[in-house]
Length: 349
Image (cartoon, rainbow, N blue to C red; front, side, top):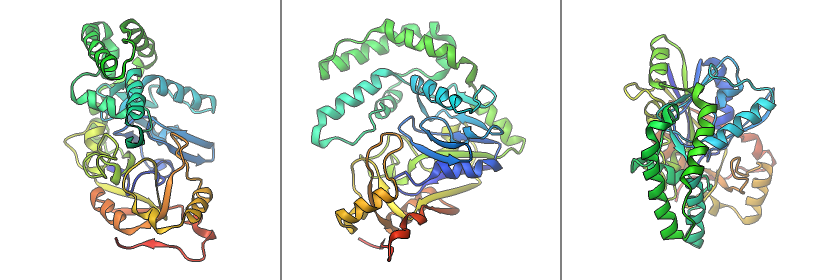
């Protein structure tokens, strides 16, 4: 059985906590897109956890977690995230976590370029999380990245990686006036993390296909929401990947299979991080928005930035439900609105 947990709006709907809750009924939990720009906060009997790259099912020892081919992975961030969880008593090993050999590696220069471009844009910036996501996805589609499977045989891709570094150096020096990149430093960075992650890397398509054939229950976890999808969201103020549920089997490693169920997550009011159209915020005064932000603790889990907030937006939500093909909906954080005498709702614009 293939089920997707997806966001109906701009993200921050509570997908992580829902995955943690539902994952007890599943054998496998799989992230299928995005990178460490995600911020999934989970509070359970073991404490509070903020997950950026790892699937939210990682907190349950009986669940196998998968990082699919549609993801972009910052190796240093992943190593730190794993170590942070281990310090809190979470067991993470190759039996518990599997990484697709086709997932793309996010290099330090992708993060560097992200920051430089936001600075260059100034007031016209996108409101990036500064994690390098747009630039690693862009390079992926120009065939100028390495994949996790390349860590298994770095020597064989060394020459190709050298041409990639030379090309990226030209970009950074010519456009931003930076110093040239050091191939030796970047190659050493790859070697360091190759030793850490080699045991986790495998053919995820084969693993998931066998699991599905055996009748195991697989849960796909999305990052962000429908309105941030690169094709169906508020382009260009979107993320750089497809977050909609229909992409889940593709980004996970099962391109020939279809979802059995799509569960859409939305919350009782609207929030988003970053720039772009957000009509709901116009339906509240600044004082009302400040109050809602504080009561709802609306600050980005990945960045700490204050989120833009407003009433629940039925227009945007109806569109999100259609994009996600949601069979079921889960409404979260209704209790945040307890302080209100009347709950505002955006019905049209």
